[in-house]
Length: 244
Image (cartoon, one colour):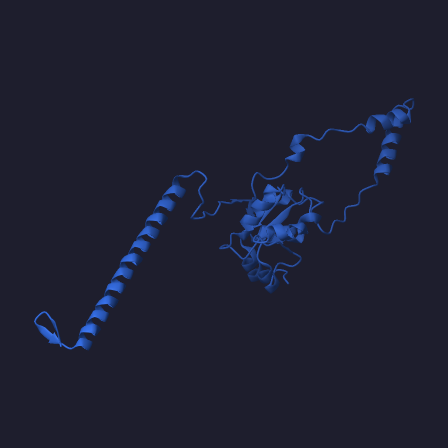
């Protein structure tokens, strides 16, 4: 028999009490250590957020949707260039024929003027101005459903910014798929599109920012005649326009 205070208990009961006390002590110690770890993580997180906030090169924790300017109907109409359309029926005379006609006109005005001097005069290369190279919008511009359909009927290229899986479930007919998430991998689809050409980017709908992200990427690469169809696939599908 063993005594604990004024109580007389058996040896086995005494061992059991000691074992339970040790377990309680272990759990108490673990709880203290866990509390310390959580406290360290919390303090580190707060310090990290504060440093990121004051750092000019910090990461944006809450992304803000960039405000998109809307295009006027007159701007959309002026964007319909013959080079943009897929069904271009405009016939252009060959360059040699144009030069021949020009020589005849000049010769009729001054018969004494030799053809060699005419050729030399008109073959002089003209320097391309900087304004010609910088043609296009200041930023990608948003368009509504009516404007998007007008551009579509004129053969303007539409680019779907969604993932390939979403694109395959349904998309605007003849549109090109270029996922924002795999842009670098599939950007070779742009090889057949001139940087001066008008293009329209779209994605799922008004709640989708992928079209804006894609338009900004393309704009940085020099595709400056760049529209964003804000209503996207959902509005197009609801309207019952051409899809596949």
